[in-house]
Image 1 (cartoon, rainbow, N blue to C red):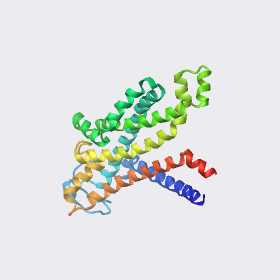
Image 2 (spheres, one colour):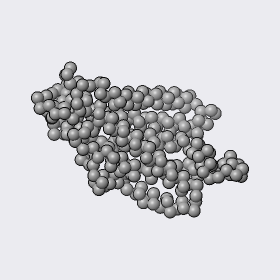
Image 3 (cartoon, rainbow, N blue to C red):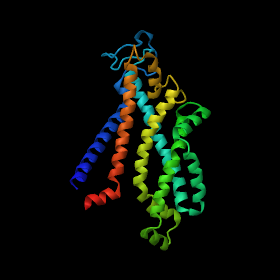
Image 4 (spheres, rainbow, N blue to C red):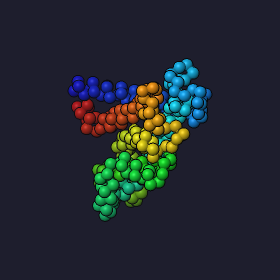
Length: 280
């Protein structure tokens, strides 16, 4: 019991820490124009490969562009992609998961299709779609959303199945509530916990995979700032300009790690089994 209480206290602390980090990162991306005077895409051959200094906090790249500025705008791109992917996966995964879980007549068909999609790693699906549709922010968002939504659908389906036959849902059905009312008022409301947790993990995965796609050359196209593309550009200059790869690499790690910590904390915090154990 003492261990569980200490674990609970620790859990709250790293949830708080991850939220603070995320607030800082989002604030940096939102207020990027106020935090730097440099243009993220304008070249300046005179300042190429400059080490960190007062003028350039994180140095400059091979085109003389300020790395700190490009990281701020690249972080904004990553957050935009992550939020868009989360919204799309929740919407489409929610629709598919609710239909599959609530209507057993078509559940088997939907689940076989989802199983076939989940037989391939999400990043492979995203790379394939990005190669077909072409690079660009919108195509990356659509490719990642298509790759992630099957898992969200399965999670929502499981939540719907576990809730739809409970007593209060049966009572509402007996009182004459239609399917749409039952789904929105009773089922979705009580399925929020797993959806929130999976959405957090999808956010982290979207940031990581967007960087991977940009690294491979099928993501955000230069000269638009992208953390993954910055890492790609820095590979050639690792010996003469190591600061080019350290800063964007650390930003990717920090973003993904904070989101994963938040997801882990939310999962444990919302776990009913752990709550019951602590109450006892």
